[in-house]
Picture 1 (cartoon, rainbow, N blue to C red):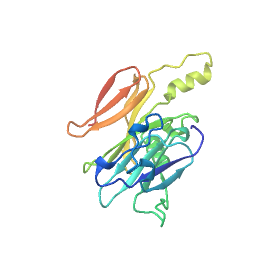
Picture 2 (cartoon, rainbow, N blue to C red):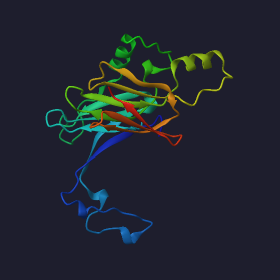
Picture 3 (cartoon, helix red, strand yellow):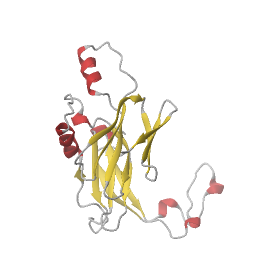
Picture 4 (cartoon, one colour):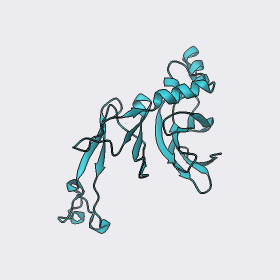
Length: 215
């Protein structure tokens, strides 16, 4: 729920995936007494201050980390998977948003006070872990700055619906930049990276799928 707390949970999945079943109260015949999903070993990895949305994992042996977005607060965060206490909870959470904001400002982007430094409502997130790239990509569904200023000056003006944008930054939030500006995507609703063809694939609520060159 927007504005409420949330959590990111880690599940210890069984080795034999064919033994994984779930409880379905509407179809008891689909319920297994052998192994129920709710009985899998799980730990709360992070308690979040608002509902997390997009989630991506860097599973490289030396850099294990989870990245996620919290749209209600306009934040992108990271926690290392091995930096946990005895109960499996992350010892620290790193807010990447300030560094993202600062690098966007250095790029000459100008944001209004309502834009949270350009990270308005980050939703889906994906990782490019190819060396030397090592980048986060994320979708943003907020209004563009010029339009926001016009709306503030003209409250009766109708906002454009093509407000989706695609951003990227280094894994620590530095060197953030705009990849796809507003004006193309109505409202982004899915993100995948085709690393073989160096293409970002973006779903649009208008029923379209966009491909964006990552160069």
